[in-house]
Length: 243
Ligand SMILES: *C/C=C(C)/C=C/C=C(C)/C=C/C1=C(C)CCCC1(C)C
Image (cartoon, rainbow, N blue to C red; front, side):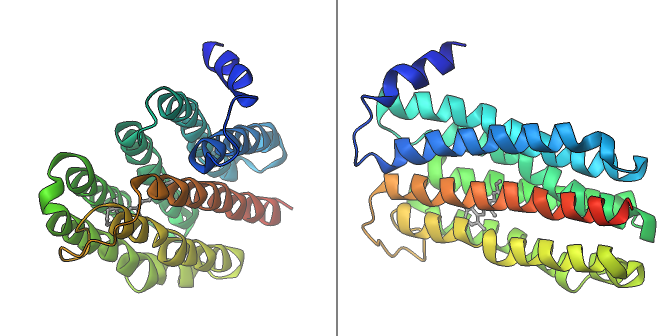
């Protein structure tokens, strides 16, 4: 409730050029709306699809809660809420990996595939956090390790085991898998771009001199597109497969 009061009382005070504050605000509302949408739709699906849509709702809901905090933090300190940002990601990105497992489970996906994706996503995020918040002097080295972990995930879903399972599943599952793969390849690539531009020296020591708050705008737009979009792909797969 406190958060909501803050949001209301600050709305009129928010500067018109505060793009970070604005995107935090819009982001939190979009994540909330998406969560309500996913949760309330659950009953219309066959049982085996409910978990997938439930996880979509959990992803946007966890993000919404973090967005309320991040918006307050930004409002109070005019500083990037990097810690909350990464806590949000470390909870939601592994859940996105779980989604790949859930849609491929009927085709025979093993838990080991899920844990492998989760493992690399955690490595990607923890090393990214080190480079962005802890050892900024070594930001490109940490960013590089993070990038390698990211490519392992991209490889697994595009060309590795997950791809083979999607092909053997065929039909709507294969279609959905392909769209999710594009989200990971293109939608997720927004984040390293934000990191490179917003963290001094983020790319082999090059300083792009971009204001750090720029990174927040990039991450906020990326989150909305990726989390809600990802969820909608799962939702539409569940709709089509439940008839
Ligand atoms: C909902 C949140 C999502 C989908 C967040 C995804 C984040 C990434 C794919 C971050 C990747 C990074 C790199 C590949 C290198 C630089 C450091 C990171 C953490 C920004």
